[in-house]
Length: 513
Image (tube, rainbow, N blue to C red; front, side, top):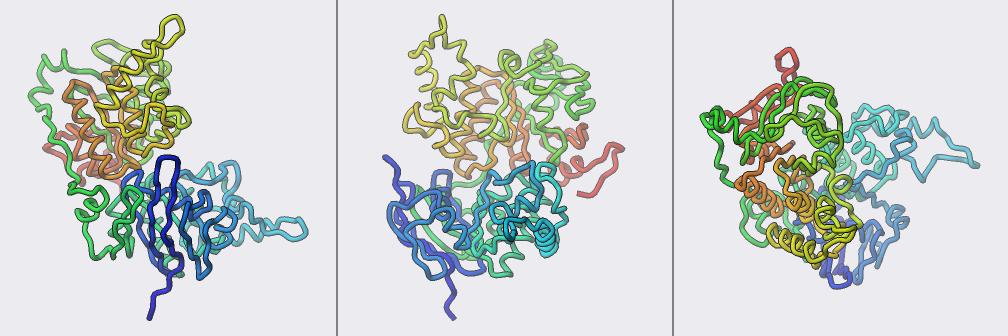
């Protein structure tokens, strides 16, 4: 029996000025399969999605959907043809209730009157089918990110989508939310929906998907059954060389060194004493020079809230922040920057870079005063600094005037980092440093972090990736509900111990994860 292809890409090529984003790509998606699409940032995944969604028109080639041939889609024809896309940035309106978001643009109406009750009932039916408990009348802005992701999936079901494209759907989710999403995806597969699943998390590919297609530099490298490959082969196909997901060897600070008077006096960069505020209570720990301090905990534990206090984005209510031996109290980020504190935020696109500005402009932002004299920027000095960091941390860009939104996720993250290196920051807080970044770029970020530590910088790394947390940290501080519930040294590291501390309640008892 011949397998039915729902969607076929035939010799798709997409060219931009000076760039071939897709080069003669052909692949087919079968009815009721979960098909993974993987590749490094810049491999062509996003361009292929945009062609499918009608946001971009292929330069050549065709697409066959349910037997009908198209040379291009418009957003409306794509949607009407049964294609639904869930992007990394959700297409939801927070001030509207769930049911209105699900039926947005397709309100159930007759003679101009909306059938609110019918839409609410249908929304509840969809959630019941998927065994998800979300009130149809709740405002989307009051939902967690994980539940907002489920609302996006419910939209696709309400539209009777035959093809659902999911772009990095697990990136903002907790482990429990990921499992809930997986159940929904598998339920859709049973109904015959075809899912194109894009993810940098290879574990998800092997646990969820049937087949996998690898793109590299705009070319299709291989399509195969997931059961016929393994992690190392997949990574090698993605990056074009053998590459193991290992971490740099860390020259850890020993317990004897950490307790010595000399190190305590001369090498402690940051010390927190009973720090309270921004949902945190009584946080006390220190960070040494040349140390990578991991900050672990479940979502909502207070890790990002701590970063905001250190960076002056939020104010403390009590306690002390000691930086280089002096008590500080940054009231806004500019004060923290001048003191030598930097933050590489979790949401780099909204908080770390200005997407519509150039690489040069982004990298100069934190040192604009240092580069200026009498209100004029010293162009030669600016160029020398920018060229140095583009070269030293290997930022791949055609020129310093390239708009940052056109760079891959890994190179965008490097631009954020270069900005703080140019500012000569002594303490750098990394909030989810490799989220949404491919395996090759991950290794480069890890090596850069290790180099910074070797040069005497103090690093705090907030991470929800357990392997990353265990592999990169010299020590790990664990938070839960805004309080510190554990401190582990490298010899004590284990996934079980981190999770035990992360789930410990304030009374010191373990709670269920």
